[in-house]
Length: 100
Image 1 (cartoon, rainbow, N blue to C red):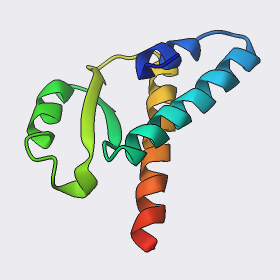
Image 2 (image 1 turned 45 degrees about the vertical axis):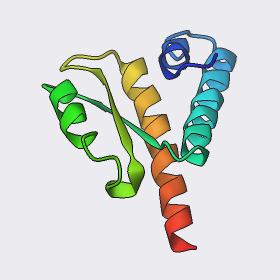
Image 3 (image 1 turned 60 degrees about the horizontal axis):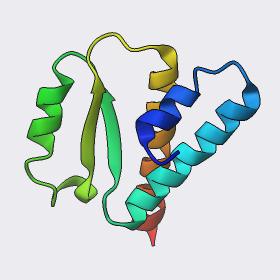
């Protein structure tokens, strides 16, 4: 369970305990990436791969965020939910540490 996508796919299982483990692991991965100075934001949508490429040209801007496109226009709810978990955790960490 060390990849974001693997954990995101676990969210499709109906068993709540599997979903809960996946959510915690997604938060953990996002935290680890942040601690390694590689915070990630997952993006999706039309031409998101082009947006990702453009935003990642300069990783010294916007808190050194690395953008990762995980899909184009149509994504299943479990992938969107996983991205929301990762993005929320990343932004929370950025916000907490910018206040200090």
